[in-house]
Image 1 (tube, rainbow, N blue to C red):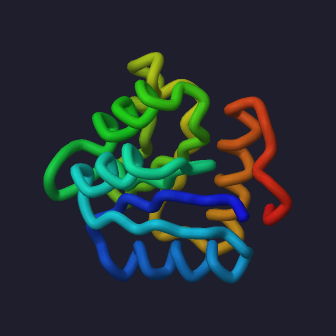
Image 2 (tube, helix red, strand yellow):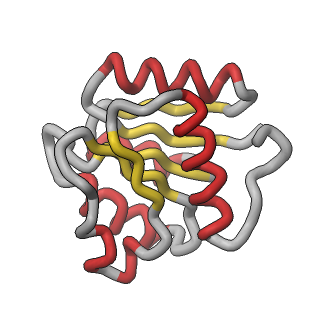
Amino acid sequence: MPRVLIIDDQKNVRAMVAIVLRVNRYEVVEADCGAAGVKAFTEASFDAAIVDIFLGDTSGVDVIATLRERAPGLPVVAVSGMTALDFMDQSSHLANVVCLQKPFRPNDLLQALRKAQAAAGGELPAAV
């Protein structure tokens, strides 16, 4: 079962994303801030990450860069309701990050996850 880390400081968004993924046979770990997400990432392995760009404690861009330093090929979906996410190509750690604008539909989320995996050069295990 593919394992996805969700880092979002909005509880309702995290819960919706987690439900969509669990229904589609993903194992999910939730983190409510950047620090908790990085800690979870260092303690377990993940097949992908979904990261909010505007977190209460830090920048999601910084979190993505930290995750990518530890796992350069990690498929990442960056989500935001505040911006067009057109700044994501500013760092090599942000290459191939798939951007998803809030609000989004469940199918949009699943498509973004598939795109992120394809951009990272592989396919998620059977669940997708």
